[in-house]
View: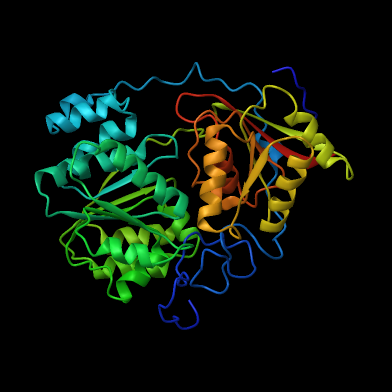
Length: 426
């Protein structure tokens, strides 16, 4: 790349279910670092926003200059040799062919190690970053077990509505030839269609903890038939304050079940969940020593009055083909997207003040290439899985190293390489 970057050395009662409005269920609550009002996603917790900062923001302590890596070395990485193929897991023949037709032939490390354990009925703790194929790692064996026994039901919990929808999309691709039924239960949209969908037998229910708990407590979602539960990106759900909801949900599901826990990290809260709700779990870790070693990282210095100009100069360069920009708060993200569009750079935004359909339209526009730039709050850090993102730009600093990792992980996914730039005042 020719560009040169300069750099420095549960409170409140539950309202009744009425009309078409969304109840207060968590479709994507904000991180604990942000404050502000309730989003259109309908958080059940007044102290949480809709997924990306609405009020005052805690001053970040993260120092991006410590993570400059302008020449990542990928050739020294040890190449993983899978012990299995999707054709040798002992799967249903038609299902195995469907997997291969979807471009999956050689399992990723997490898939190779986790799928046999789940098929054997073990509780599993899978430690892996996004972009490692972990969704298929739990979907494939759970689909196979459902094909063997159509009475099985699985509940999958995810931190954001975007991730829940993407999990179901992958489920549908893998089961296009099978009579497998599923529904997504997330906040930020009317509960009525979800209630109607739950009247039929669903083999998979995928949702965010707040909305799922609402449906359970209102009697629309019966949990006594669930034989498996998946906590996907569990660390993110706990960080968003869903610990109480998750505990209530797990308590309502029969103890004789498969419990699968996927996370990038194991926090103290996560350890307590594991101890309280899992039976002799098998742990599989495919975390790399340096989870961001394959992403070129640098800082971009700017003056106090030319930050936006610095950004637009970068985005007008042809190599910035598909870019995610992270901002601190909802209103600033919306403003930045509008200003970029006015400057001739096709942009859209995703944040907690946008309705569910608006967020989906923005994602679709970005994935299809109709817009070059997606400006987002941290609600998107783990909920967006878009191929071939060339750059991630931290226009506003993340609060923590973990937030930084999740943000820049939107590029350089799988075997791809990516570039992450962080704006700092020069």
